[in-house]
Image 1 (tube, protein in one colour):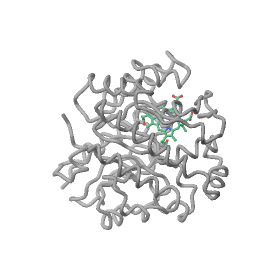
Image 2 (cartoon, protein in one colour; image 1 turned 60 degrees about the horizontal axis):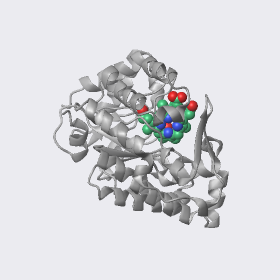
Image 3 (cartoon, helix red, strand yellow; image 1 turned 180 degrees about the vertical axis):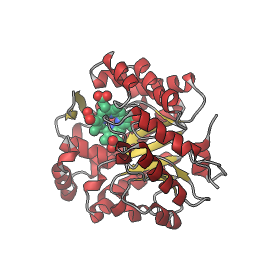
Image 4 (tube, protein in one colour; image 1 turned 45 degrees about the vertical axis):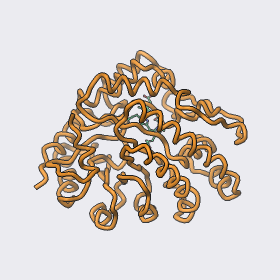
Length: 333
Ligand code: CP3
């Protein structure tokens, strides 16, 4: 097995940096769009084991990445808690529940057995590269529950946090997410990535007081399952310094930080940092910006190449392939 990503995170000797991309199986791929034609409703698509296994595998065939992430969504564990999730075409997720924290349920990983089957399917179909399982961060899931579409801002979430009424819900989310991740690990994933996409709306103080407290608890619990944990968040320029003793193995940063300086100060491995918009540029610019980043990564640091956030649906597959090849051809001197 090509275990470059595991070796890089552990700090073992490697001669090139591993590469995978957030949203690597997605709408920018004609082959993904073709699979989606078979099941137009997104929730039905990610519950369809056969289609989701096929989608998970596409980046290995087409991009030759060094790790696969299972095809699913961060909102999946909310459904057995009592929150219905729907995706209207082109509109993003919509959540339906009664708004009463007391009615939220404890879950068992068997409640989302389709995720476990997808993992087993991906593991059974290939043994070339490690498989990444994932979940949302407790704060990010809470913000979906209270504000629906967090890109409009987090008005309800913030008011709820400040009133002190969110504590139990965040505690329950942590418990449920630990259970959800445990199932993924038992089904065979080799790493876990936690996606905390919406913390970027918080003030530094609120990040510390509300998001980070639960996050540390959560990551400490999932570390007990003994697989490497990557923490992805947006707002890296603001919050990185709050994560100094986060018990994750690897921190995935956006493009707003000086990654080299951060690597000197932190004991974690790092992932990411390339501005995804580089992929809208011409091949020469993609090559230059990628090599600029790789060349400044110190030789002995633990690094996994990725973008600072996910690929966009209007990016070109050929450019994405080229990016992966540029990373793979770069030798660590
Ligand atoms: O390839 C991969 O990265 C693995 C699969 C994956 C998806 N979503 C598939 C998906 C992963 C890891 C996610 C995580 C996810 N989902 C996050 C965290 C990462 C981030 O982007 O910040 C978030 C916030 C979500 C919630 C969500 N799901 C949103 C905001 C959307 C986009 C809505 C839209 O239409 O633009 C989704 C849908 C979604 N999840 C798609 C995919 C491939 C597109 C749906 C489609 O095919 O129609």
